[in-house]
Amino acid sequence: MKKFGMLFSLLFCTLLMLFSSGCSKVPAGHVGIKVYLLGGEKGVESEQLGVGRYWIGFNEELYLFPTFTQNAVWTLDKREGSEDDESITFQTVEGMSINADVGISYNVIPEKVPLVFQKYRKKIDEITDIYLRNMVRDAFVKIASTQPIETVYGEGKAELLKQVEETVRSQCKDMFVIERIYLISDLRLPDAVVTSLNAKIAATQKAQQRENEVREAKAEAEKAVAKAEGEARSITLVAKAQADANQILAKSITTELVQYKSIERWDGVLPATMAGGAVPFLPIK
Image 1 (cartoon, rainbow, N blue to C red):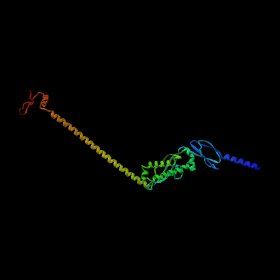
Image 2: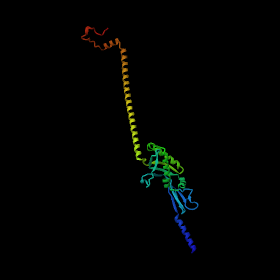
Image 3: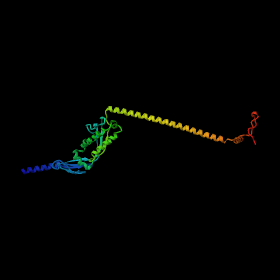
């Protein structure tokens, strides 16, 4: 009876082990990590598991890590997937607080998956929302603290994002490939700061408009002067040409030429009346 009881217990334990074990699948686009829960081998297996089916015992647990591109957003809006405010806040060199909705696209280097799990002991979602977010936030805080509010809010925004992306990429290059870090919406600043910046921007634009108007008026004036000078030069050239022509013509006129032209045009009829009884003006030889 005692032996029967021991046999029953052994059979029960065997069945329990079988039911608590099973065949698990590593789907396409993922890498599996087998973790031993008990015994001297507990921890992470040195080799990751590729796509396929694997027998996972009662003393083992399978963790799946996607190797395709992951995209995460940290926003103030609850509709983006989290009930918490995950937006990132940082300060400029003046101490002005800026709040931003930030997104990131990245992927895990497949052969580094065991290293990732050994370091963080978390699944991919937790690694993203805790560790990667902290890296991005710290990069914003560090870089923006050296820049003025007008630069961050204006033309320097793209450069700020570029530096943040380079910083995070350098920090995790051994495990992750950072594809892109980006802003989802406009930066949020205190209302008073926004009003002041908008007023300054408007004043700058107005001054620029006036400068453009002055340049345009100057250009029009120079154009009119150039036109007048051209017309004056044209008149001078015409007058000079006419004077030169008259001078040449005057030098070419002789007594014989005048007489010849007169004879050429005379119709042979003398005037009916001549003052003082003058003789015909043409000496005919």
